[in-house]
Structure formats: structure tokens, C-alpha cells
Amino acid sequence: MLDFLKSQIFYVFPHHAMSWIVFHLARIEYAPVKKLLLDIYLSLHEVNMTEAVEPNPYAYKNLNAFFTRQLKDAARPFAEDSNTLLCPVDGRVSQAQKIDNGRIFQAKGHDYSLLELVGGIDELAAPFVNGKFATLYLSPRDYHRIHMPLAGKLTDMVYVPGRLFSVAPHTVKNIPRLFARNERLVCKFDTASGPMIMVLVGAVNVSAIDTVWAGPVTPPSKNRIIHSQYETVDIQLDKGAEMGRFNLGSTVIMLLGEHVELDELISHGNTVRLGQALASFTN
Image (cartoon, rainbow, N blue to C red; front, side, top):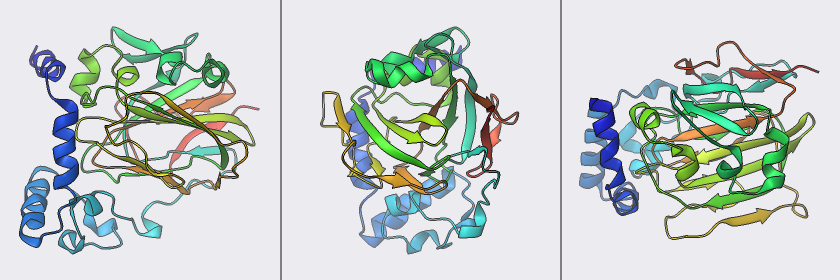
């Protein structure tokens, strides 16, 4: 009951206004304010700084630079099997299973439409109607950069405006169609093994999503779907390469084809790390 009541607050919460404030606070470089913000953040979240290239949190120019800190190369070894898709983030598995005729399971009693998730664009949804998905939640203490599960060529990017509900477990359980209602960025790649989509879902205080090819994509001022196609632009990303990043934490939803088997460790509630096996191809 408490989780239900906490989630209901978000229906009247000023999502975008609060996120706008956090966006600007996180970019303050004035040393006393930056230190205060970092002190508050570090008191609330246990962050492992030994893995970071710069282990001193106060050395970063602002709170956002700290959020998006780079890890040491050896901190996340990648699964080497060429048949394996890498987990793209550090985080926790919210859900991972088969897509049921275009419906994606969110939590007990809730699912949502694949077509709605990708912005209502039929040709993007079609290859995944009976495929697999993995919903990966990044908490505020996690590494916030997102990497490629396998090599691919970018073909489409779709910005979908929406709410900024929290994506914490208690709201996922209680707010219907949450991931299809929140602001998000849909990135489709062609790979040697077929199409793959990475959906970067915004959330409260996640007021900016960046990609390596377009920079900041989701300031909360846009109010229409924007579909960018890249047939004539050669954007190729290697397996394991960085593809984007979040300000604060949020969620990545992987959409994969039918001929993919999710790894046994990619199951509800499990902690995952960038570079471990996410799935493998069955043919």
C-alpha cells in the first residue's frame, strides 16, 4: 500500500519543472555549491569510486560530470564470445522475457504496447513483435554511460516526448504503461545478426539523454515525435563502444529478434554489469 501511495504522487508531481531545476543545479561549477551537492549525493548513494578513471569525486567540474564519470578500461571486462550480446549498462534487471505478440511485460498486472514504445512507427516495431526484451534499470549510484551490445549501424533515432515518472521499482509496479508514457529515445541499429533497438527511457531528474552521434537529444522543450533516419549517414559503432549516457539514472530497454536466447542471469531482480553476457544467437 505504501508503494502504491508513493507512486500516485507522481501523477501531480511537476516532472519537467523539477527536472529543469536539477539539470541546472547539476551543471553548477562554483566550488562551494558543487561541493554541497556532491556531499548530499554521496551521503545518499554508495558509489564505488575505485573503478573510475578519476577516483576523487570533488575533482569533477560539476555534479553532472561526476554522474557521467568514465571507468577504467579494466573495470568492465567484456564477454569475448562473438555469438554473445553484451549487457549495455550497469544496473538491475526489471524484466526480461519474450515479447508476446507485440505486448511487453512491465510488472504484475501491467504490460504495454511495443508499437507505442517505439513511437507508433510500424516498421520499427515489426521485427520484434515476437522477439525478446530486457528492461535494465540504472540506479543513481550506477555507471551512467551506455554501450553497444554488439556492432551495428545506426538507421533510425526517434525522440518521443512524454512524462518523467520515476522508474524506481515501486512506480514500475503501480503506474500502468510507464515506459510507453515517459519521454524516451528509440535507437535502431542494423547488425550482422539482424535489427536491434535500444530504448533510452527518461525519468524524473533525468532531463538530458546524450548520444555520441548527436550530443544532447532530450531537453524537455520538445512536444512532438521527431524521427531521424540515417540511411545516407554512415554511423557505425563497435561492440562495446559507448553509444550514449544519462544524467542521473534511468532505464534502457533492449529489443531483440526471435532468434535470440537471453542469458540465464538476465532475469527479474538480478544485478548486472556492463560487458557481461546479455543474450546469444540461436542460429
